[in-house]
Amino acid sequence: YEQPISIEDTFRGRVSLDHSKIFLGGIIDVLPKLSQARRIIIAACGTSWHAGIVGEYLFEEFARTPVEVEYASEFRYRNPVINEDDVIIAISQSGETADTLAAIKMAKEQGATILGICNVAGSSIPRETHAGVYTHAGVEIGVASTKAFTSQVTVLTMMAFLLGKTKGHIKDVDYKELIGELIQVPDKIRTILQSEEQIKAIAETYKDANNALYLGRGYLFPVALEGALKLKEISYIHAEGYPAAEMKHGPIALIDENMPVFVLATKDKSYEKIVSNIQEVKARNGKVIAIVTKGDDVIKKMADHVIEVPDCHEAIAPLLTSIPLQFVSYHIAVMRGCNVDQPRNLAKSVTV
Ligand code: F1P
Image (cartoon, rainbow, N blue to C red; front, side):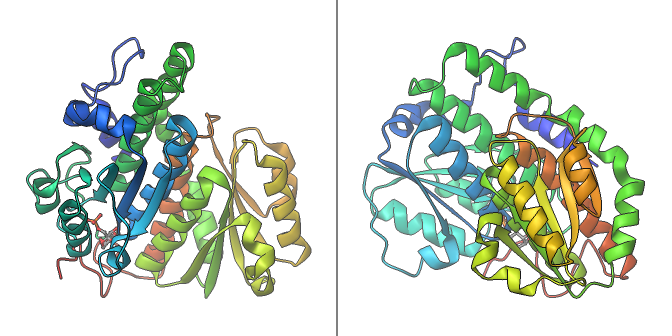
């Protein structure tokens, strides 16, 4: 419920009133270095890693900079090739995650430029970085990251637009339009939050499921991963997120009448393909819960349930579509009697 405000706070002072400029003071000195980077490596864990994949899609599309997204918990232990013209972006809500901290220390020793996207000012990761942009999500009480995730994606979106503009890949007119789209996100989330009763009914239907599948394409693939993680973390239901196009390479074998399949199906350039994926699930009697663009009557006729989100640019869709998935997980967890704020076995910052 706080997400419209945490995103507005993350925008504050960083977007001009006429929507023509983005100003990220924390990275202004390294913007030339970032513009010339041969590649960006994003290192993070858990939900922050999912934000990193959204970042990869954004940076490659708008700034045309190659991006690799690494689990910091793997990256730190292998022997990756790192160059002085690489920029590493560490994403961490707490700023204390031991794996992410170790990954950036290693990359720093090898001469890379290190940036941070963190929520907690003065925490260990920002202290190790050369520059960075704080998210302004405020204190996150629940262990499972929710508003921190959407604030991280907000910062990554601003950075990708700014970098794309700086590198000359985004024209002035498009820049203003993209910023205009981004700035509408808090109000659009307020609209989505009004679907609570409908989301509770969906949660009631699937609260006893043993498994769930989450599918998305393009910008919505990382949202599928994040949707599955939220369900796992707080309701202890086994869930898998997949790129929808991978379904036929394995997960389709799991689909039967007991399998709820959450499909991220808003209007974008993969829309026709995602409609085919829904048909494939329905042909195997799977239960489809589709997140769709408001007014989509085509998917409404095919899916068992639809949750509508307002129309938006496809690059903005992760910020909107992740909300109903968080919401469903929350209500399922409450109905199963789980402690939503403090799930078993999880810690807010993993410092060892
Ligand atoms: C990373 C993370 C969170 C997750 C849980 C454990 O934390 O995996 O995404 O929700 O709290 O840690 P951070 O590096 O973003 O603080």
